[in-house]
Length: 421
Image: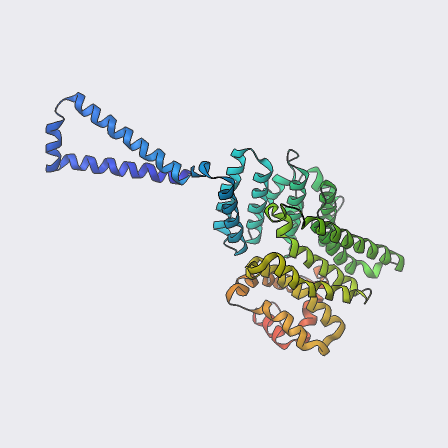
């Protein structure tokens, strides 16, 4: 708003300068004859000043305060535009629109909707790679106890999503390097330099979010994070310990299914944003959890395949044409990766054609897939392949297994200089 006010002031100033220059010209001589008396000149200048101020006020009203005249339908349409721009990865435009919506809802007195706009702003910064700006915005919402439990829980979930698809230590450290009691308690005695400790802290923080308010998405996300941790701990666990953790993950998936079924029948399902935004992402987390569990018990391969097969139905029912937006494709790229990695593990070269077909879109460099890949899955591939040997997890093994089966994928990651072999 400030920059537009300044621009308006300069506009009025330029009008004044034009008038001043006119007075100096031959044309101005006729004006001076009309206003010989000081009183006439004073009246004229006051009138011009009043007109100038009126023009500035009208300009500011039309450009900055026009939302006062917006009814709920127009605000909803504006929200839809911001959501569409965000889904197309038009980060700067979406952030400006979300900031304006935050201001609108703040003035209207709806602090929870205003906070939801702040969550979306922080998440957009994170998706654009500006974590140092996005993470503090999400924390400010997450730790504000004046907000509703639903909003605070959503903010924490988005906070963890800042790193889960791009698991870099510095991002996780930015989240947990905080004196807030909730953050400190989640980290516990964990070491900020230890990646495994940070992964466990993320799970602990998600559990705290679930205690504040439970979403189906949170249960799926917890199931995926816990299954990922289980793969790293499996050699140190007894059969009984493995079984106990497996049952815990299955319970989370079941609970996620129950809550998701209720949430999609809510009248504000799409308007609320969180459930709608993460419906597909929740299924991605569910598929990942089943794929990881399949390494322990082959029976869950069918469960992961069922999730993959049902995604088209979800897309057609809830997303329609929106499924081609980069944000949707970003989620789909992870779905494809985890499903292809499971098939590679169990079937190897026998499923070469299927695996290559599933993973192929994640290598595309043009169109919406190209936009998506550069912002989402390529960051993931690069990060996993360039980790130190000590920091590598099951994702590194999955990428290399796919590369061993698909020559095109192997050439792709070598060409990107993420791998030499």
